[in-house]
Length: 380
Image (cartoon, rainbow, N blue to C red):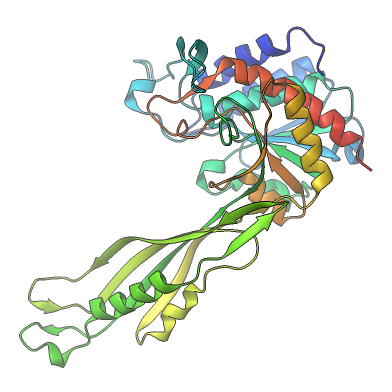
């Protein structure tokens, strides 16, 4: 267990500083805060590339440091107007509210854009990185919210730790108030199906080919696909497929020549839903617009080591769980890094006007990360 008495307080102070620094349009300022703090408080080799990966720091020999990495991101989605002050800065507020775990008492929470997703966990990882006494790597990527831009750049440049603990939310997934360990998460494949026909006057529909009818036939095929499922280290996970938007037609008296709809597919490790079958319909094409990979931990020893670290730092028992959202862990896992996700954010907090993070949980995560890095360094 971490013995630095300042660990929790430092993680909270750093969270406040990171949350106060805007990073939805331009991430360079908060990236510089992260990099400068690491330079001032550690002996790490620190790189900040605001147009590339973001911030990457290593302690010790590079090969040894890449045994295990603490990974996060410092970009955020656009703030709600209530989260911005008159000068354009972010509003950061600490309040005492009822605990989310139903324990009946209260807890202190830090409110502000990015507090949950995921500057609280980034701050906790920075402090843990400072406190550990073994070689390790820290990375805070840019552009996670727009498709993992920073993580993908880092991977292209050779970022390849053996193990990574990604600090996205895992608190209150199995038990309210408990920080669990995510061993699998879904990916997202977004696609567009386009149906083309031949326009004509609606009074003589037989002269044309109705693109909406063709699209409707394709929608029926999407609804009928078998959705894949997976089991990761004993945890089951199922994907999903949903038609989310549809557009077509040019007038009430015109048989439409085009109609398109979008499909949101949440993917799991292994097979994908056979959406390509929509192209069996005449005049229909299918285009993949985004494909965020899922993550599945493939090393039980690592998953158990992080779970043991989480268990040691809290009174109630954490569990290994799955997560419905894609994270940078998917890109890392696809490139060969064995990943888990463990972080302070709870379901329903990210991207909201009332986004907040539990201060005690941020403090806990700093201890979990340091403990988990030490345990992982001992794996054969």
